Image (tube, rainbow, N blue to C red; front, side, top):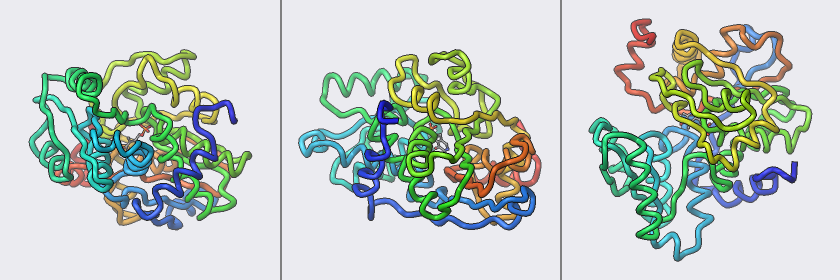
Length: 327
Ligand SMILES: *Cc1c(COP(=O)(O)O)cnc(C)c1O
């Protein structure tokens, strides 16, 4: 595994670097899922992380990996979602500042949330692609340091620290269920878990609609997919045709990738709320969704499930819970 872009040693170093700056989130047994699956199931409650998702791990490790000169110039990203929130918080916490580029179509509440975390907001163009062009320009012309949401060794190493915490909480874990989009989380967690426990299986979960990593793994190279709205909005977007880190790691380390329907994701959110008393967003629900859908077949236990985030509009969450919102 030493030939992969991020190793267990990189992740252990990231864990030392970000300790005390991120929450070590709880890992709790799930009686309801344990009964359903017939093997012990534990939940990593990473949606309780500061800023509401695991993205703070990667962003914090990336900011701490910069030189003081780079940190003084500031960091930049084009993200309206959990990465934007995380990078805004991480930069501010380390005495730097994040500039987050977004399009004019981004709703006001999202803009306000990220501004409140201390970021400079730059609103440009009418699409995420145009916002990315502006972020690239700020990096090239004004010297800001680009921190991408997943395809970056320091970001992947930061996300991998979640895998170390799972193995420490459940030392005999046999199967880890990981939400999958660009693959930063899955690559890091798989490298950590398999580095410590070579026999463990790591399974990526994503939505049926626009599953870019799944399509790329099937094609043997990064491919473009059409983006479609999903309840798991944090799982949208491509993996980048010039992907350098996460594609090769997911190809080498993931044992399987399972796709879930919108109705199954909604059922996962409802189960989390009704049985575990947890509010999670669609992307955070895919692990539970996979277990209750029965799509995983007979599982090797014990099983660890990552609940990756909770940044969902609460009115929408209520509609999903009430069975009124299944796109
Ligand atoms: C970003 C994100 C994911 C997917 O992570 P990748 O590293 O892009 O695969 C899953 N869940 C939540 C809540 C996220 O914010």
